[in-house]
Length: 335
Length: 250
Image 1: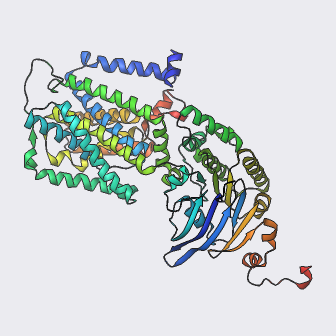
Image 2 (image 1 turned 90 degrees about the vertical axis):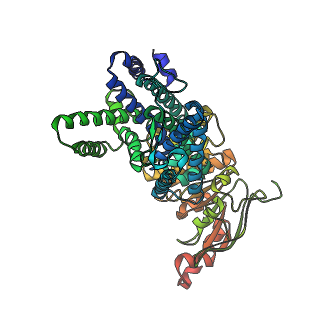
Image 3 (image 1 turned 60 degrees about the horizontal axis):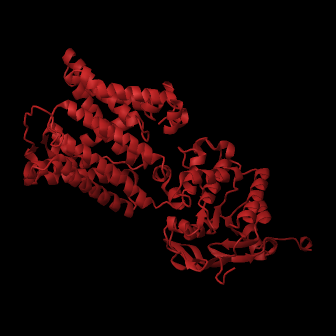
């Protein structure tokens, strides 16, 4: 056990905790209600999108407030290819991921070439998302502002190839994606590219002086993040079966997507997952609570207040603090 | 030594809006030597560093490393060419450990992580930062941060090291330690050093050659002892026509 933990570079206690968590998550659809499973699908979507966004902001220090753009591009590509050509979502990903990566490289390339950094870069990401939203509103082939709908068929069993099936199927699919993203980000963060990203995040001038081609590495972060985000976009389209530019590319969607990694811990590996769990469960319990109390609109208010409290009390995010408290890691690498 | 000088700076100039920060400056640095670039504040020392390091492109002139023109390259390309620099206003990667800071530099010539870690540890030991290796860089004192700047630059395996006031703010004993460190570094690794420094104690003890700048122009160039006696140098440091008592001249 200790040897396996050492091989993986984690503490034995973290290994046990991780294995236990994985076992519970794998068995969840067998004992939990369909409501719990559908909430967990939301948790996993938020976790995965947070992981993807965290590559840019958490690792490379590039603030994107327009990440809904990549979700939307993936979703629309997958949905349009399905509706018009009956192509399965996996083909949709093969098309949607490069489209999102290209969009990211255009935004990143323009910004980094002309020295647009910090908040100005963030503003540019919003601008591109808004611009795309307006463009798609007037794009008739994919339904324009009245939306794009995927035909819903009631199948006797799950069809993974066409992503038609129960929430449990989506649950396992997203669980696999979150696990894969965790493994990938952990791998990258310990390689040269991960150290280079962190160096760029901490001080771009010093990074450049140490021989790092900051343009190239920043672009790599944007492309990877955008591509990963688009995968979730395609799956989301097939989960909800409807798409509107006004919601798919909304700035609110981008902000929502950022909150899990911020609350969980920017730049940490497990933070986005933990943050997604905390926020989604919090949001759902708020809904239940306000329904019981019959006070409309108090949900958002309470949600905002809790968010504010977390950010004020633990500006580094909840996960490093929780990980240290559970003794899962020495403080140094509580990630 | 090859026919081309190790570092040749020829007639470089840089203007910022109205201000001519560097005006037709030329000098050479021989391989394996320690050369100091000195002058009062605003003389153009850091601008020259930034021109060599690729932060700015010179308006005129040539900068060549062993015959290869490097003027106008981007900073990371200058580093690839074998020139590493420190920043006067230190720029540590605060959230990373001291060792990881140096590791980032070491990854330049050691793509393998294990080899890069070894290099980083060796350099930390050389700079006397081994005990702080696991501390976050943000926790270091200013003197330690200056050493970290040097360690990080050194880790990229440069042929020429540009040190921008790495001894400012150090105590005299610390300066002596740094001087000894740089001396042994040059002796053992053959690296060439071009430095700017306000601490004259360090300049005199360390440099083989001194270039003096004033208002963006070179006013003197020679061995430390000669430069220290140069009337134009004394003038710019002590003020115009410093009244030196006739009796004091002998």
